[in-house]
Amino acid sequence: EAPKRHKIAMASEDAGDAPPAEAPSQTTDDEATALAAYDLTHKVAPYLDVHLVFPLLEFLEENTAFEAASVQKARLELLAPTNMVDYAIEIHTALTGESEDSATTAEMAARRDAVFEAMEALETKTERARSVLEDKEKIAELQRDGNFTAAYLAEHLEITPAMLDDYYDNAKFLYECGDYESAHDMLDNYLQLVGKTPATTTTTTAAGAAPAAAAAAA
Image (cartoon, rainbow, N blue to C red; front, side):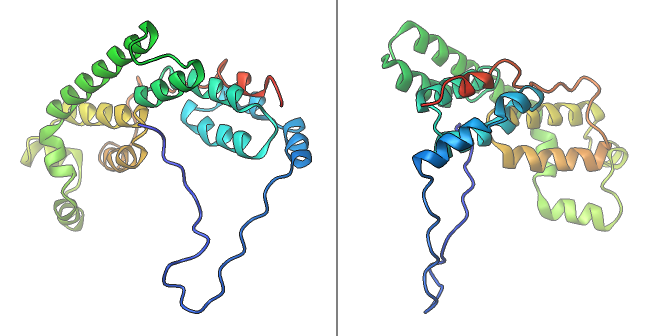
């Protein structure tokens, strides 16, 4: 459930006789301290969706003098409102040294089980919609014929507006699980069909969580 880290490939295996790309220089201790002094994470993070703060914390951890444990603590706090419970358990046990049998870890594991149950329920509710919207050839056909609309799906494919709302909820749930690619594809389909997200949509910001990462520099 850990969010995916995007890295730039420095050289391709089939690069032929081309010389290997020069590896980037490592950040020195002095440079890391200077970067920490100008860090604005604690200022911008409260206004960002929590998932957008994870790459910022990764940068702090790898390029500044902030204590790794402090950054990990902030990451753990950010994970609290998400569905990435396995990732949270991994960080919690690393920070505290607690076993998986401890009370806190057991409580987190119970929440993880609840997340899986909720995921299965959403998959069941959206089975009909996903059978069509995960079929790329079917979508291409509908788009080609000008029939990729909510009205057409309801009339001819028995996919009602309520089913599309459930489909949106499933996409949002996967986003909170850190499955950003699947969530993106589903939301793209939903927006093409409906044109906007439901009025009840909420965004969880990182207010109060990320400042812990900027509290103590090594």
